[in-house]
Length: 379
Image (cartoon, rainbow, N blue to C red; front, side):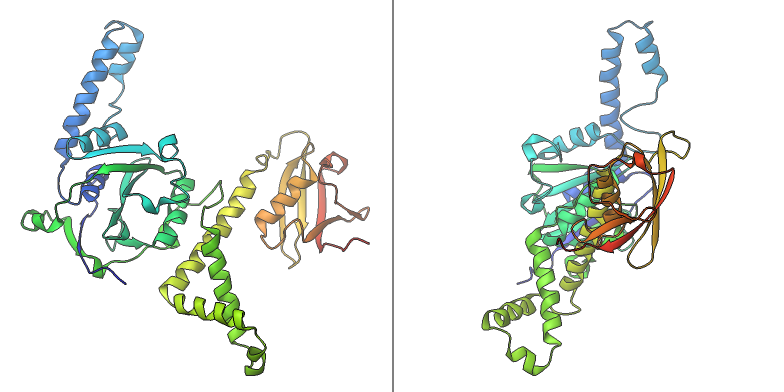
């Protein structure tokens, strides 16, 4: 059953004041201005200056510190994490933990029990907030304003952000309970109250930079549900006679899935997006698991060209000390349907199956062509 609509507070990006927007959307009201955060930053600067002065005002460390720009606020209005954290403490009883902190271990794979997340990449901050049973992406750069992130998609969304290089902080504690509409008469042009009934969904397309390095924590049971749904759709396209041969338990399983995932629905599309994202992250994880590709001018390397089953050619440079297993991993990352258990790599001259994973590549010339064949059954 859907929750009744409520109002969300959201701020549209102005200049480089995303730190201000991030905190205000977290607190659901215009609690801070850039002047408030600048004062907190100035306080930190002064404390740091006093500490550096202890080494002597003529010391190299002090002179270097004085020559550097503030580490707490940039000229364009970007603030450090310690400024945001300290400012929050002045308003709410909350603590921010880095996503990898031991006190929030496991949150990335099961984030739905949390209240909020603050995300940062270089000079941009934004909030992901749980309101009235629903998660919202309150990024001030979103053209359409707030966006819904379903509980199922939240884990994949956070993982994708982390892989893009975002720092993610878990916000724990007591946030203000005042409804946003109390600020209705004092909002600036970029400050808005948005009904949750008018908020759309976030999708993979909102992640603007490449995803890389580790496997997404999309839950296996949800992916399995999507796969079962796909199988059920296929079964339903069979003839009436074929459907009559399906066992009662299978029919019940399809009916259950159909009741929850309708063809063409937002939930179905979301599951497909999550599967696609999971595959992409898995490929990136495989690539990250092998040594970096050497430069062309590095000694003791070779260029390996591989012809896939569909005729596509891929290539990569390897070190002669790399193993055949490394090549198989590269192939699977480039073509997820070419798993090690399903294919063999074949060298042409002389004809040889590369079935020894630990075999090094130093027996090949500086350029070698391999082709893929389906794995042969053991005889």
